[in-house]
Length: 174
Image 1 (cartoon, helix red, strand yellow):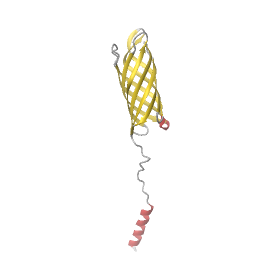
Image 2 (spheres, helix red, strand yellow):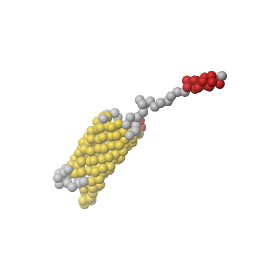
Image 3 (tube, one colour):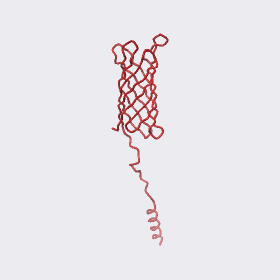
């Protein structure tokens, strides 16, 4: 009788216990995204007038809300009464998505390397930004500071170019 009762209880136990295995269709898959963008902006210091550029960005999504980025490209600063300055920014960043995984804040840090023959304007740079990123579209507004780029302040040479930039990009999963 004990064996029958024990066997009945064990059968009942196994019949009522549900298995809660991980459903892979609902788990987050880490992945890479690639994007190409166009930027334009206004330098906040003399002698610069406008900045226009293009870039490529690789983004590694470490979770649904957090990503690591690597961005490089080419920018051209037009100068009042002089030759423009071309430079290549190389930046790494960290992006945090807010509000339904579309709006984000991002911080980037890196270097800007002059490619203009007569301009020796290499610099470290940092760039906080806010943006909107849908499946294929990315629009962002950023403040960018190039610590060692030459400027004119109070009619004297100085360093530290600040600028406000807008970026529109197309992105896709790799």
